[in-house]
Image (cartoon, rainbow, N blue to C red; front, side, top):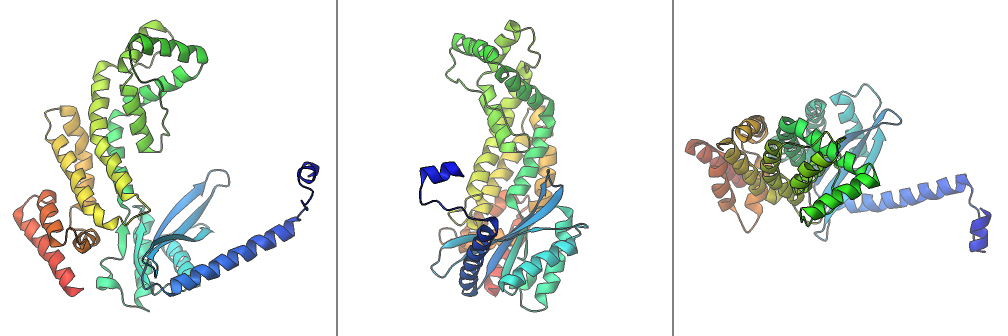
Length: 365
């Protein structure tokens, strides 16, 4: 404390109670400001997710709002970050969300609820529907209320694909750890890299729970495949070198995941509307999975079997919110679904049925 006073003679010590009071006053002021903004908004979408603290061994729920303000600017605000005590059944989570919405005065303004694919979320959304339908009319008779997180579904696809080369990924990860563990090993590896005339200089270690970082690790490591093979002969303690067959698998998997990585970046944007982009991006995912499934490479065709099953499970039927958003894009209109649906559905009858469904929904609105 003395050091602060020495650096700034105007510094005055603030006791904990005053600091707490100031923080709460600032919170209430910002909350009232946001309430005024929300009072002028007609519809609000919310996203919610659970997070478990590894240190406290408790779970928290965050509720975020997404809306367009009176100046037609896309807004995103955290509404609540609350501890959810056990048991955490779907109805308990729904009650916590509804309490939050009522506290903000937007319980009758909810357009959609975006959640991941955790099993308790289905019962949570059903309970929310029942609560909200009692006091307000819901858009399209609740057909657009429950929205599954697109990025989370893409993550499920990728995890299924990566699980087929988990041993290869482990070898690459351990290779990067081994080389980066000591300066002497890193220097020796750099000598090999220079000997092979490679431009790349730095290895990347992934975060195992984030598939996009694993994708980046594999793509980076693939550039060093000849260096790894040579280093394997140079260092007798190095036991993790992938085989040439493994490097071929890594190359094919990275080519497949490049589309998923690009799509995730597009639909995860926060500075621009994304709902009108989903349908085209999903069509690209479907195309790359189908191409891999029809490949003469037995490894790739087998890898995509669970990915195709997941795609049919979540996006095998027409997603009305994606379709409506695509049609409302003035660049696309109905041509959007007429172009993408033949690429998504196998038979012409399915295409015509889903296009007609989209046209009927737009006519109702």
